[in-house]
Image 1: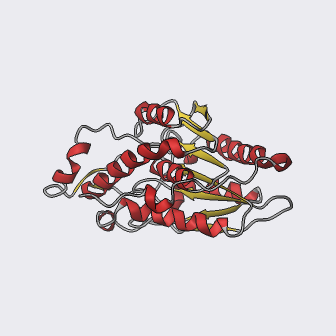
Image 2 (image 1 turned 90 degrees about the vertical axis):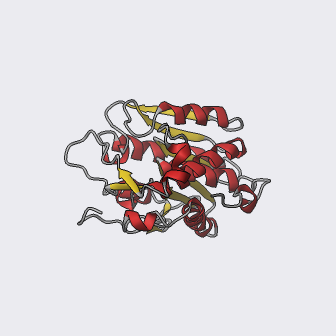
Length: 273
């Protein structure tokens, strides 16, 4: 990891009057809370309770990430959601890249009031992805695609190598998340960079196809690459997220969402090799 960056989790409580609003926030694959800290601070500054965990295997070394399963990443975010749900009237899920897939999983298995995503990942276009389960036995890591940021001088602090075993887990996470997308009923706001060298439009197409019971609002970012939370359009994301969340709870609407018919455990299949 790059030294001098803050990879620690972020936590804040509700402030101000009105409904108690919480936001559970997830960073991306091989990244850390550093890349989303300004977003989390903006949400906290608006009076929302925020929980942004450091996902297992992240913020340390790529070798440690190689020893984790996608269910551990989801579990960490789900625990953060439950913490907010115990004290908030409304909880929203949000995330960047892989964190977007995790935020969608929370929305599919928990009663969230809305979802905010930045360049969410759901499809790996690399033709080697289906073979990662075999390749991990002979190839430990590959060069990473990090710091896809247009703004000069920014560093997301991601790993310099991508563990193949973790890429295999990522592929399984994406496939299973696509499977349960029809369970999402809360409105989804997506901030999408017009130029993204990490996540292709295949992920957006999969999201459109899967959200059969939830409205999707797509906002284009014209001056940012993949890690848009550290890029030129960051303030648009921050303020837009606050506005979206407030619009969802203004005037006492919506009613608190009912729990999804399918439990969280049922939505997570047994681990596969």
